[in-house]
Image (cartoon, rainbow, N blue to C red; front, side):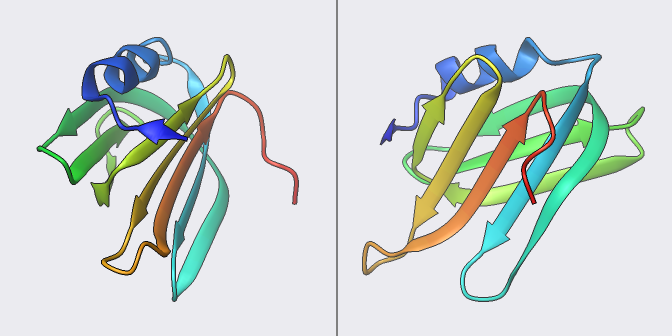
Length: 103
């Protein structure tokens, strides 16, 4: 994982605008949502140091917002964005893919 670069992340997410994506969100401790499928309409990356990612989905009928993100890993068909708490423990993860995630 590398430190989150908002410009690089936004550029990658914009490649998927108008296409179906699969989403995995995990919040620790607490819960997760896996293999949500939606059409990405717009993506936004905002903030400094602790970044916020907004995904507008399905003709702006749904929004996903994850904040305090610090690191990312970008591949051809997968983006992983993570945030760590004050004790350097993984606190949140947002994964976006062009393919379904394994269950």
